[in-house]
Image (tube, rainbow over all chains, first blue to last red; front, side):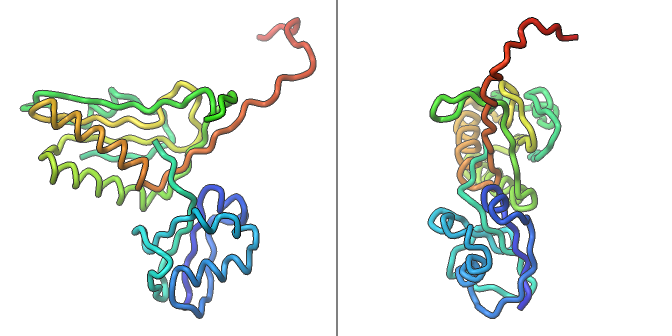
Length: 80
Length: 142
C-alpha cells in the first residue's frame, strides 16, 4: 500500500521533511513507524513519547492502515 | 461555535465578535499569553507555533461539541495563533457565553485544558541570543 506520512514539530525538524509518501508492506501504524525509523535513525529517541494520528484521528501503534491513508507522527502537543 | 487557527494577531474583541450574546447572562474569556521565560527561567526571544491544521480543527470542534453536550453551551469562540508570536502577545483566546456564569466558567476551563491535551498544535520556545560582547549603547538608533 501507499501511504502519506506527515511529521510535525521536533520530528519534522529531525527528519527534514514535513511530508513523505511511502510504499509500505506492513499493516499497522507501529510497523510504519519502525520502517521510518530504519530510514531515519534520528527518529529513534522520539519513539517513547510520540503520538500517532490516522486520517486526522488520534490513533495508536496497533491501528490498522489502508492504502491512501494519511498518517501523522508528532511529539506531545503543546498548544495554548 | 467559531474556531480559527491563524497567523494574524488575535484578541478578545475579535473572539467576542463571533458570539451572539443575546439571551446570555455571563461571558468568560481565557487568554493565553506568550511567557518571557522558559520553564528553567531562561529568557525567550519569541515563540513559534505550528499546527496540524486540518486535525486541529477537528479536535477543536470535538471539544466544542462536548461542551455543548455537557453544559448546553453553544456560544463559544476559540482562536489560536500559529507562526511567530511575540512575548506578551496572546497565543490563544477562548470566549464562552452562557445563560448563567457557572456553565461559562466550567466550559471555558474545560476548553483550554482539553485544547492543551488533544489539539495538535506545538509551541517552540526560541531563546534570546546571548548578549553581544560589544558595547553598542553609544550607537544611535534611528
